[in-house]
Image (cartoon, rainbow, N blue to C red):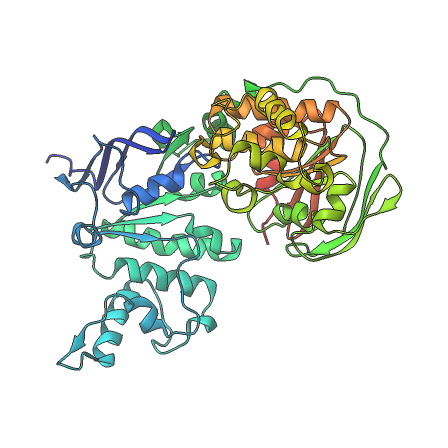
Length: 503
């Protein structure tokens, strides 16, 4: 007998936002009755791919999609996806805690009767129960979701996605859905998926944990810089190290850390920092010119430290610079040379409708401007930023919103480096930028440290941390779990990160 048609076939999928291409000619095939993993670094295009498959984003012209051998035209509509048997489960599982199991499964699918469109609850319970029975759920259909175990919440989310699929058919896309589960719930979650796969249902799992993908997926595809660099690789016998090399590619060799002179520890001291994301106080000494990396799994607490220190989140503890304890307000910190570069550049860091010039000089106007004029400093600072970072176009009057992501990031860094800070708190500086911009940004951060600025760098990008950092603190369960001292490889960082639980 001929092999059945693939459950999902994607050909030539590209997606461009403004000047930035996020996906480039991606091909992907998911077989009937398999769990197929998709992995890649942050910014590799994983989430954008999921949004294309779910119909949230329309791909660039020329993309093709087929389900069970039948072409499905773009742009995708939700009714077309449901008719083709494609459903999505998102990262937070989409569970409404104050609603019943029945309501959570049937939301968006309930059918009213008569002129009043009254909900027939016994019928809705029956629909939900029939789907949940296939997933091994044994609880009450009227139980509030907030009282469910993690595994049962996952079952409810899968049931919502699965309810319109004929048994043995359909595709469930899990967009980082396992991030919502503790390690203890993962095995039960995958046992549920495996029971569906045995019936013939397919699962496309977009995930961050390489060990998880190797253990539970049948095949895996790897995205890097928006391209599919490995497609449908069998996971049997595959090692995490091999998969990591495929995922990181030339990023490991793209930038080598030059030698840099570092001062004596203690010029900057963090003492007993405690706030959102941290379960234990953080104390740390930094030296002039030192770059210290912070990393970990999502939810481990590493990504809140710079915001706590920079006054963006409330915190207790002390920040001491050159023997003086600082108040953690934006203006007080900036006066003492402590600046925060946030991770979401267009939400937290830049004015999209403002020019490059206005964005660069805005934080420093109170100190630099005269009564009637800002003087020549405004043009000098802007032109210096454009030249130092290679911003394109090199036009101070260009609106930041029209720039590519990499050039926006360069403006954001230049804005906070215009006054030669003592301590730079920076978050995900190369997130969603292209390879050329990534190298420019890493080189710029190295030059900043060379000038004597201490840098605290929070990032999930192992290759960035290995290229720049003198030390890396790996967080787990809201505390520093491992300290890596240079020279540090990306593999060292990934190994330490994977072995530390997020919660």
